[in-house]
Length: 271
Ligand code: HPA
Image (cartoon, rainbow, N blue to C red; front, side, top):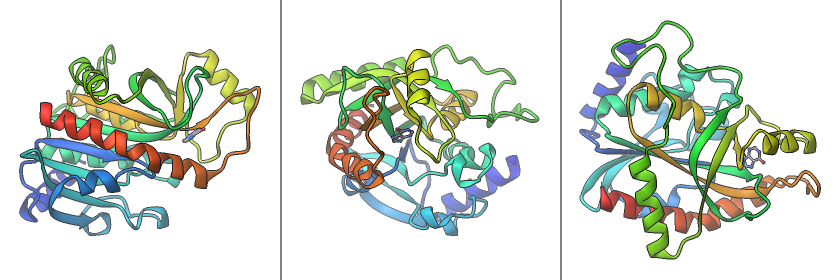
């Protein structure tokens, strides 16, 4: 795997994606606005990146976008790989290893998630303060890559406190409601039953989604500071559950994109 990571990073360097300072992962229904805020220098489709997982139909549009935001070099993943698509956890997190190898010093993550906290409402943003991993596999399972990080990584603060504080300050200044809470990751691709939503609330989660946690585990392994924001796309009230509407979930992610883009563009400016 080490050779693959190095070879992919070398390819990207040689193809105009040299020395990015900040990495960003743009989740489902998110991203086009952020990319519009970038001064784009180079775009490479995932299908052209050596060793990247073979893109599924869902992610034929996935691409790496490299450019500048407020004078900082940024590399964005427009679209991510999910475990439910059939990739291994190592494949899902391979791009994060590559971003670190390229030199990013911070990783900014976004996702769409279901809202489990009935004091909040869909359309709002949640800063992830902590997570619960309910996915059945772990990207660090297997032989440890000692050059990248320790066998037993610490997870006392996987979401960087300094980045989170800055995001809270930016949200306050910009008048953006930014909730803060616990994200639980599930495999999907089905949404949850009422009993499952009740269970997830009970164990302490505020939002549920099918991504992010593997990426954060790998970032923690490599000592890469990261932060993550969920767009709450649907209300998961076990006592009044409406049938899931994927079109609506994507549409709500789209409406929240403006605020999410503002938070991340201002954060990059402040770094
Ligand atoms: N559950 C899991 N993942 C999700 C949801 C949900 O309710 N909404 C958006 N992603």
